[in-house]
Image (cartoon, rainbow, N blue to C red; front, side, top):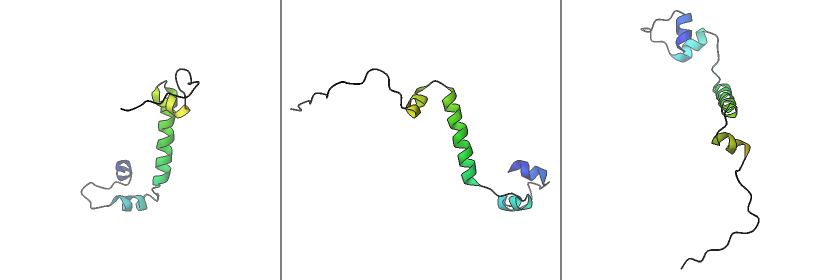
Length: 76
């Protein structure tokens, strides 16, 4: 919002809301679009690195899969 204030030459001493600044700039704030963009930017960041979060997203597991059923433990 600060850059819009500067472009419209609005002083910080004026009592102008952010919504009024958007109206003056003929822009619409789209929260869903912002969330979508940030989520995909973050996902791209995660997929570029080799870490645990990437393994979780892709569903990779280390080691071998168990071949038989685990033994039941008796609690005494």
